[in-house]
Structure formats: structure tokens, C-alpha cells
Image (cartoon, rainbow, N blue to C red):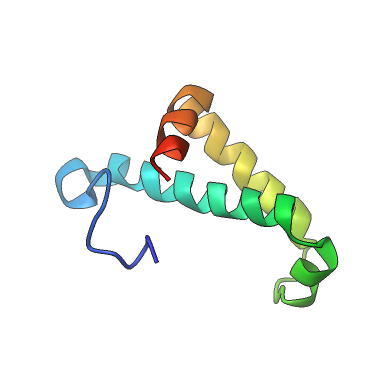
Amino acid sequence: MYFISPIDLLPEAFLGPIGYVDDIVVAAWVLNNMLNHLDPEIIRKHWAGEDDVLKVIQQIIGVADQMIGSGMWEKIKQRF
């Protein structure tokens, strides 16, 4: 819902590529919650990719953490 919402924490139209940081953080947060609250077999059942979905999600979360650091991550998480 957040990705198609007209409301954006850091709008890309004004900030350019930096505006995508909040989108990456929200995606990583959603993926992290899926990992922590769903049975891995349910996630694997609905995964259309070739690689192991859990490894892919962990890579995405790792990259997001490297991009923005854990301090910014915590601030954005608190908004949700």
C-alpha cells in the first residue's frame, strides 16, 4: 500500500535518488516482518524466483542496512 500511496516520507520528485531510500527501508521492514512472523515454508511456497527466498530477503535487508545505517532505520520504523 505504501508504494502506491501518494504520501511519501522522502518524495523522489524533490530529492531525486535519495528519495528512494525510504521506499527501500519500508520494503526491507516488510520483508523482515515476513521472515519473523511467517512459516518459512509458506514464504517458499509462494516464491516465484529461482534462488532461495530467505537468502534473497536477507541480502535485501543487509543492503538496506548498509545504505542507511541502523539509526535511520530505527527512526523510519517508528513511523510505522
